[in-house]
Length: 134
Image 1: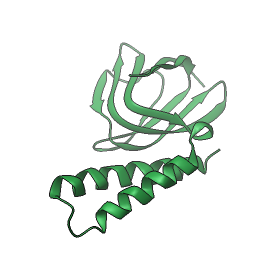
Image 2: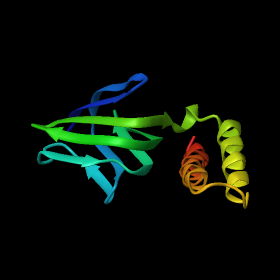
Image 3: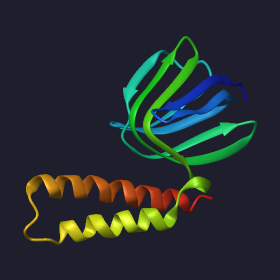
């Protein structure tokens, strides 16, 4: 399969810099698959699963927020959070889930607290789900 240059960089640093055959990510409008010779393209990222195929090997990650750009064949993924499935701390994700769920069941929680808890709950669920791809 034809390859393209892919760079994945987060606020914490460079995650991937090499050639890839395929990239699948969740944009705010749905899943997007990138192959070699993709047209120039920019989109904001949603929350979900990312798949990188490089050297014939498929790796899955939790990818949350950020931007994806394809410019003249070079693909740059700049997520807010990106965690390979085999690096996700499932116990930490479960603890985050439990904390968020507790806030959601607290009748005295403010609207702001509820919205933050909903976002944290979604992130925890995504991380727990992606960890199963190890």
